[in-house]
Length: 479
Ligand SMILES: Nc1nc2c(ncn2[C@@H]2O[C@H](COP(=O)(O)OP(=O)(O)OP(=O)(O)O)[C@@H](O)[C@H]2O)c(=O)[nH]1
Ligand SMILES: *[C@@H]1O[C@H](CO)[C@@H](O)[C@H](O)[C@H]1NC(C)=O
Ligand SMILES: *[C@@H]1O[C@H](CO)[C@@H](O)[C@H](O)[C@H]1NC(C)=O
Image 1 (tube, rainbow, N blue to C red):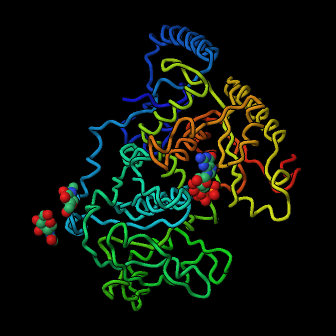
Image 2: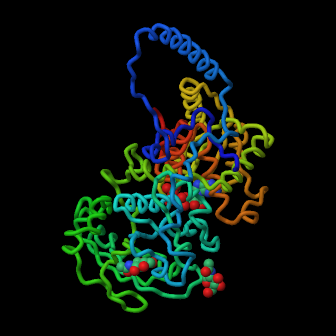
Image 3: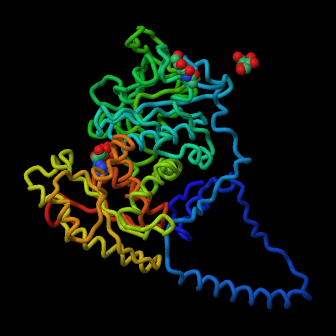
């Protein structure tokens, strides 16, 4: 098993997870009455052991804090878990229906935004699957921001799908495991359109890649307008998980059926499928508050996306980069570090309006202050004093990168490493994302979901610190 990078003694995520008992951990704190003749002896032994354990604890606490090398994630017991592919009849078939069990219900949906948003959308789909007791079938990531020629990448190439399934306690399937990716069969399917329901003033169903990726020709039924969290409010297209779920049950299902729209290829007119439930788009979904991933409560994060651990191969590749960048050998621990994620490309410059770029985006002194804040917190709370700082950014200007290196901060060099040729076009951003989430601190940018997810990972996986920097004016982050 590959070396996963986890903070030794700190990473206790999965021992706290609600499914810990599912994984076979039992704690027995039931008090017992003691016979009085033995009590004194046991109290003496107990006191001795308490003192001993305090000493051991003190010893452990004063160990040089560090990081990595040992994988102390609690591994699920495989004997307590079923085969992830049990909901399939066999290997991928040319028609998806030939591979579904008749005693199991499934659910699917599609992505159509930037990569991080798509990660959140798949997480929402899987959370909805948990709420409705269905098996989620997820597609690959498509290269919307990477460039079309980058091609698609399987979810399981990015995230550890076996770990995910075991940890959340439901099998998660990929479309390529259900239907042969080279099949030319175009199959009809009835789906609900959430997008039509939440867009005020009417809309088409959200454009999906279902036809090109899975050969699915979809006949949509518009969801009811009450799906929208604030019906009629044009600035917020969110819907609640349970409102959407209700369409899969009586009486909401039959009460809201209406004339389905003909599918694009065959002109098929089909009510929403009950065996494979499907929705066009699930990004704007929350339990309580719009854009809920930003909030601690986010159930999609806590129950699902939090368990999107990087695929071991990807983590290993990123660890190799870190070792070369920090100049540590393979058998040395990677030092604890603070990562900075700076979104500086054109899609963020547009938010600056008239403010010049260097005044708009966080300055180096702003980052210095945030680094000091993180160091102070990790010193006090964890006894760790991270000295290494690494910058990850979509900035293209070499002069700006020089100004970063002048600070003594590290950077990734995907040109020198020849990352795209070696691993593919997805890997510069994937490796940077892994590095952002594998330190003890992360400084991100307000408005960036990529920063946000890195922040949640660092907090939950490593008990680390996330600071989100405000920007837009030179003093925006003053506090
Ligand atoms: N290599 C690299 N690319 C980045 C970095 N940050 C942003 N990018 C690029 O910018 C894109 C934006 O991130 P996405 O996750 O695709 O987009 P999004 O879901 O809209 O995320 P945000 O715009 O950050 O909210 C990425 O796909 C990369 O192409 C980074 O730190 N390193
Ligand atoms: C369900 O499938 C099993 C085997 O795959 C078959 O024996 C059974 O008859 C099917 N049941 C129904 C109701 O179609
Ligand atoms: C998928 O289909 C192709 C072409 O029909 C075939 O060659 C291949 O063996 C199939 N793959 C699987 C896993 O069934």
